[in-house]
Image 1 (cartoon, rainbow, N blue to C red):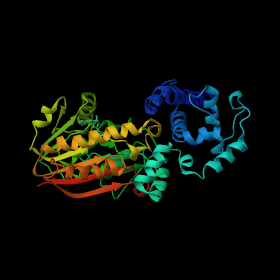
Image 2 (image 1 turned 90 degrees about the vertical axis):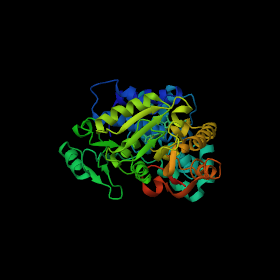
Image 3 (image 1 turned 135 degrees about the vertical axis):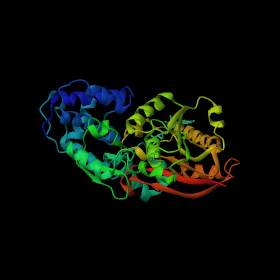
Image 4 (image 1 turned 120 degrees about the vertical axis):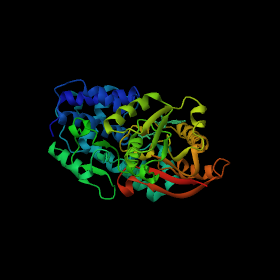
Length: 403
Ligand SMILES: C[S@@+](CC[C@H](N)C(=O)[O-])C[C@H]1O[C@@H](n2cnc3c(N)ncnc32)[C@H](O)[C@@H]1O
């Protein structure tokens, strides 16, 4: 691979914004990719993937490069040099990469790879938490699996098309996919490509949605004609799936505390041809109280640590803090306690997170079931999904039924 100076400089700029200015990696990459309109898809891919790689392996590379935060520009180049050496990329004779100690880098890598928190590049607290929560064997596998780049998975919008027809339409636009047989509506891209510019996307034939995430809406056991509430809808990845399963029949109420997210959902719903959905901003407790005892089905896709989706958000390894985890656990229990009242007798509810920690998952469900608000509910089943087992995002879902 030949390195192009302007692309590498863009990576260094991105790393500076992410590591030193603490900006979000996805936003930074969007910004940096706007530097030069002439960059093609390979150039853009290089910038995005190299930046994400160095973010993912930050701790390991910092130890190898013997640099420290805040990183000066020469130190950012040293991190980049480590990336090149470990990938077997020949270093160009640029001033910034002069005197790179290639043998020492390889030696340090071999030495540090014996210790999981360096090899898999996690902060001490997170590595310790992962091991104590999941046990050594599972965490060792999971911490590695969460470092693999996520594949692009699509969910067929069955309101508009079928999986086979979509596969053909995409192929006609030069996008080859394989069907994932265990996931009813899922297609996997054979090669990473921008699917958002395709006619198939503009026509609302699919949404990009991880395979694990595609299991959540079906877990709720919805049927056309029901009243279904999605109380933490966000921009609505799962709301749109619920609408498909309901075949646009019945009433789908999407709620969130942020109006801006629900606005995005409305745009997506229009593209998807969803007609049975309305959005409600949770501005106060009245919005929830109005629906007490009214929902046949309730989805609580709760805010969480996001530990199951590190593959797509590698900078969350460095942004997440123990205090946030404690705070979000409080929010999760509050959501279970207050929102579960919307379920009608014999109605069902799914509590889901994109976390792999029992303290955000089964333990929250147990606390709820032991409480006054939970005494009317029965536990039906739950499922833990791990990147190291299924190969997709880490998720948790529990199905409960009101007596
Ligand atoms: C995991 S995300 C939802 C993702 C979304 N369901 C999807 O499939 O795309 C959690 C959502 O909960 C929302 N949220 C946070 N606190 C909340 C609360 N107290 N009540 C309702 N929603 C809340 C967040 O704004 C966020 O959109």
